[in-house]
Image 1 (cartoon, rainbow, N blue to C red):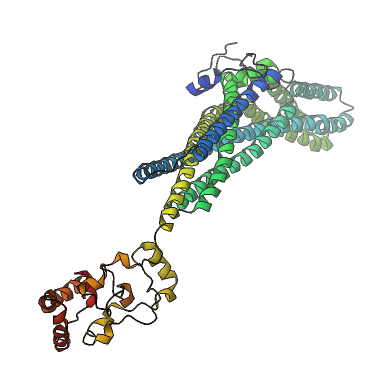
Image 2: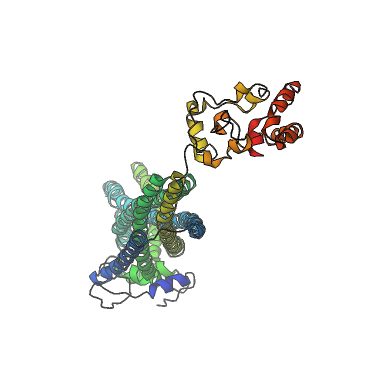
Length: 561
């Protein structure tokens, strides 16, 4: 028998995976033939999972060494070295995010491809099970009709035709034909055993695939959530969120290595089957179905003889002969024995139903239906299934790289956030010009209730009493060294000494920039010549200022100038 197949050719990745080294747990090479019941072959697949476990151990060890060096050997960085570290953290986070997104996309595609392949396998198994079940049902029904229904009709006709020996001889001949039909039906293989095995395999495969698909879906969602949460933690500079994502990142790293080992072992085992699937099927059906029948369904070639052709031909000839005999009895015996018509018509109906069953049985036993289901199952497993497993392996590798980059970037980001917080702590909280103090003032408005507005001193410079500092200034203890000494401007007059700029509620230079420049220009035009000649001209300037009520003049801008 020729075993050359033209309708199924294994793809290249099947042979690539099939050539993977097969080593048992004793590190001894074994044959790569698909024999799942062999203990050494099972150990060779377990060995691939152990390789992934060893990779996980090396990965965690490298991460532990990196984190130990980062925590123990890190020195305080200078201001010039902070920018490169921050840039390194940013690019590491960007790379981890991009790789994680690519891994999730590949994982979704691989999970869908694997699910499609397994669904095609189970669908083909159920179709084959339906075909074999139909064959078994037709055979059982035809045999039951021949053994019980035909026997009863022939027994009654034998009593009616007792006086006619030729008619009794015809009934004996018909009984021989019926026995011959039953004998041919018994010669067909018992499909009930194969039907039960196919149904059990299909149900078990469907259940395993459902939980596998759901597990990978949850793993993909977990990877995506961890990636987004880590990006949020970096954007918000939340140390507790980054620490939490680091813990979940280690957990996901372990799951990624575990999925890599399981997918790789499954892909290699499936590839070993896909290289020679016919050989495995024939070995599994040995002792249950003859090899010529299995070969007929596996290859379904026009050159191969139909093993059921002889049985079906004898079945057809027997039914035809019986129908001819019944037609003759209806034509010649019924006029003599009217009571025999009912049984003769019953036999005729039974033969007609048997003939219809014969046509259905011939169609179901044809190799094209089961061979199509077999090829669909092979394509689903060896093409879509193994391809999806390879994409899932790629997903695991990308996820491992992404989470390794994230686990390396998070500690540096954590230390960078801590250093920035220390820099903020070094700034004077009482200084209203630093951003941290403005944030505190925004959160605590009562802290700024004692600070006067910028426009409250617009035209109150006419009297000397308005120049005295307020009695209860909450921020009067601000450092005077940050501002110019007013005594140098006012000639050491005790009325203006030690009056801090912030104590009079003057604004920072960044507030009301345009209005401030206009008012300073006006103040310089009016009071500049007076102030340049000394302190004795100050009363004159004070007497001139009330006449310009619409021009605000400030001591604070003059003090800066």
